[in-house]
Structure formats: structure tokens, C-alpha cells
Image (cartoon, rainbow, N blue to C red):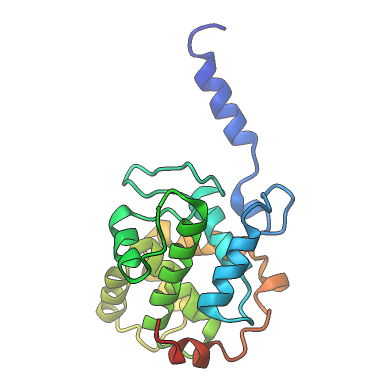
Length: 201
């Protein structure tokens, strides 16, 4: 093979593969291998009425469901958790034994999502989830500072997202696209706020 063709081939293969946002979470392009784990920990941390596909979509946006991915910043696994974040979560959940084990990586990611979800007090449960995802991507403190600086406390997600970094806007948009808004966003989330606020861990 002539010099340089290997790189061209890799680029060609990547560019010809479907982007995450061009598919929905139920596409046959995504593995079903981890679905039982997403279901189990969504039910544990968000309750029985919450659609577990939200967190599978998040994992697709994070890693394309590749458990071996490590980012330039050192984030690891399906849910792209930093080792420091995982260590904090593990201090409260000692049975989360290894960040590079898919089960515990997913469990820790969903646990962290719930932690972030509970920090936001917004009228819409669905929009509250978008705030959690944005916080997961950009950092809770950064998002909070942005909202305070622009006096966006009572604003809708559509107003808030305009002030966020492009990467974060794209991240949440990708998750929503994977969920195919019309198909999944209307799934029942009844009672989720009371359930989460009543849980101690």
C-alpha cells in the first residue's frame, strides 16, 4: 500500500459511517449488549417509569458504545468518566469496583446523572434532564455560572442552550436526536421528581 493510504482509508471509513445523530437509539447499528445494564441502573437510580434509552443515547454520544475509548482528557469507557469523578462516586458506592468495567462505568454514569438531575429545579422534568446532560458535559458549576451571569434561572432550555458552548449544545442535541423526540421523549416520566427527591442515595 502506498505511503499515506492507510490514513486516507481510515478517514474514508469514518466519514462513510453514520453519525450518531443520524440514527436513533433503537437502530440495529448499535449493540444491544449493554441494554440490561442500562435498564437495571436506570430503574435503580431514576425509577421504573424512566426511559433507560436516554442513558444509552448518552453513552452513544460519549463513546459510540465502545468500552475501550479513552479521551484526550483521560475520560474512560462507555460513559466517559474521569477517574477522579469515578473515585468520588465509588466512595459512596464501594461495590463499583473498576472504571473500565462496562457494568460499573454505566452504573456510575447514571448515578452521576441522577446527582446532577437533582441539582436542578426546573418545572419541566424533560428539560431538567437536558440540564443534567449539559452539566455532565460542561460541568455543573460552569452551567450554573452561565445561567446566573445571563439571569436565566426561570428560562426554558431553548433559551439557556443559546448561551452554552457549542460542544455542549451539540452534545445534548445528539442525545435528543438519538431519542427521536417524537418517538421517545413523550414516554412516561410520571412521579419521577417525587421518587428522586425521596431517595437518600
